[in-house]
Length: 235
Length: 235
DNA sequence: CCCATTTCTGAACCGCGAGTCAGTCATTCG
DNA sequence: CGAATGACTGACTCGCGGTTCAGAAATGGG
Image 1 (cartoon, protein in one colour):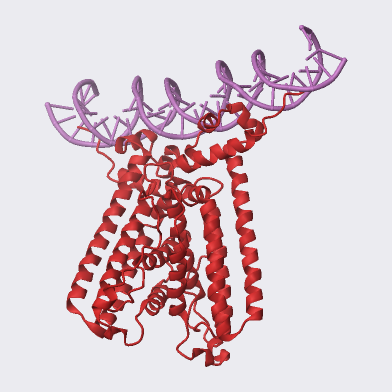
Image 2 (cartoon, chains in turn orange, red, yellow, brown):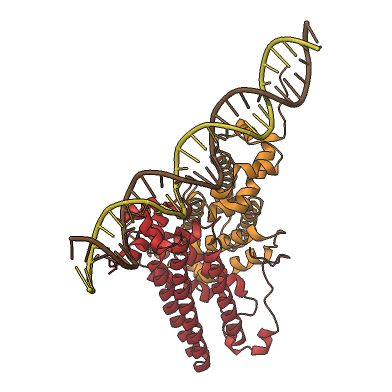
């Protein structure tokens, strides 16, 4: 009869590794320290994972699935919203929607703050370089696409650049995510979410009575791409 | 008589190291590759620097001096501005001032894009962890302080949080800095700077005729700190 | 108890790369 | 020319840490 496997070994290794990655970074984290932290041997580590990078890769894949899921459900809800609501009611619904979805995203970032911190500051020189930053690009694109729709609907001025808008939002949450890495207790970001919404809403709103402007007129002024560059490569 | 030192060795090593750090990160960059890139020997490297970290430390110190200088001159100019200008003229001067100073900062970030990229994404696990991010905190504090003054002067609503405002600005430029790392040619960020200014100005402006509101009334509503956290540590 | 089996251990292996240092090089001086 | 000197070289040393694998451990069955 075979010796039974420790049912907690795998998860213990993952937890210990996550803590060590957060403390020392992927490259400086040592198998010796990871295994010592959870009372297992170096050999046991290799029973479960090919390498520390392989372990981290599994963790990152899980985070990416969570982010992808959040993004998908947000897009779906946005589509519902733009189908159902019009005019002033639409504006109110949008504000609620954005605040709610942003809170969900921040909750997720809080739950994964140890991993995002590593991806943000310690991935260069590893296979994970750019993973987190590429994720930000998805958010930028989403915001730009939503902005384009809102301009067509006449609730955002035609001269507003979806790209800059996205950078303001994503940049803010990027800084928040960084603070999460150092926080011992979950910060209350309610006021932040609302203030960001307000400032941006005011900043991008059409002139008073702008909602009466013919949609064609707004669409006739495409927003210029604000970061002109000949290089399309992101890496 | 001693063999004359190669007058270009030191700067060649620095240039090669910077390129290698940008490509591979501090930890993965190898002395062998750095010296091979500039046609010198490993031993020559150690004639000039104690380690690759020591070399990078000198480069970072130079960047920090440049940033500190920019910050100081900006603070000085801001003090001049707030001393000289009032009312509507003040608003116009502020807009010009902010756009000019932001351009200068972005020019600096462009010039040092290889180093900031490393500090941003590859410093965890090294003595340089947090250096770049700490620099961002200085900017956040500067913006918050300026915002407080502008609120006192009545040109910014009292409910605006200088902290969120700072995050929006700094976060945006953080994303710009990241793009710099991948750009082959300097992007034109003029439109970005103006759009950011506009959006934020509209977003934080007092209600129409708000300039007529008594300053005391605005100061009586201090902005709440939006990221409430019990942890004061940044590291 | 012994046996079979799988899980687990940690000493040993081994490759990598930072750093060293004996020897070479480049220069002027006598 | 040889001597003196500091700059430079690159083969070698050495320690670190990822990885391996012979042996130990844990388990149920007969």
